Amino acid sequence: EDQVTQSPEALRLQEGESSSLNCSYTVSGLRGLFWYRQDPGKGPEFLFTLYSAGEEKEKERLKATLTKKESFLHITAPKPEDSATYLCAVNTGGFKTIFGAGTRLFVKA
Amino acid sequence: ETGVTQSPTHLIKTRGQQVTLRCSSQSGHNTVSWYQQALGQGPQFIFQYYREEENGRGNFPPRFSGLQFPNYSSELNVNALELDDSALYLCASSLADTGGVAETQYFGPGTRLLVL
Image (cartoon, rainbow over all chains, first blue to last red; front, top):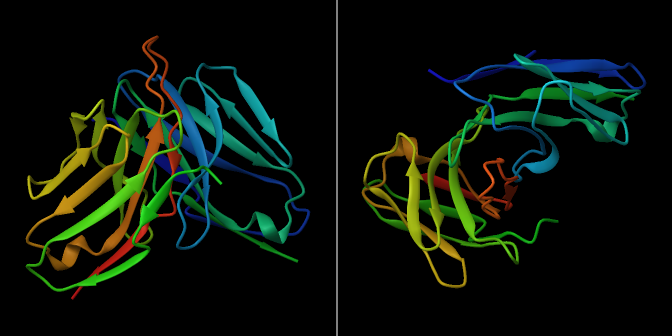
């Protein structure tokens, strides 16, 4: 069965303390991996799409990387406004997109 | 903002009632997907519509049904509401890619449904 697992469930950082969020997947065939940011009570906001192992994308303090089994979302020198839930999703073809449960990130000033 | 809108923002219903949620896709998009997100969980795929036809369905019972209109707006209908249907319902629009590459989905703000 296709599965997407995110770790840790929650992460508490001090402002400026860099870290990484993990998304591991076991799927029959990867067509795309997506990262979203979700604030409480709101819809997910698109961050990145990755299609093949070795691919990397960056946006401000965030950098997403992809291997054959997992993806990392690296956060460099986070600020309190980076506090949110980060969701990873995998598409295995057509309509089949599976989301992980998310990592809740708290950044303290 | 994505350009995907949903209405209403919040809704309270009682068990057994029926509800209709609405979504307006981002301009230029031809595919809409609906997700259910329980508190503390990731979104769960309900179904997808492409060119007004159901294109795929997740593990949800038939009392969850949908429509997509010629202008690509969409509805999610839920009959015989149960307490466990309380959740955030998300609509996501995308532009279907025939080249086999997974298209990026853009989400609306969601509708918070509470079933009492």
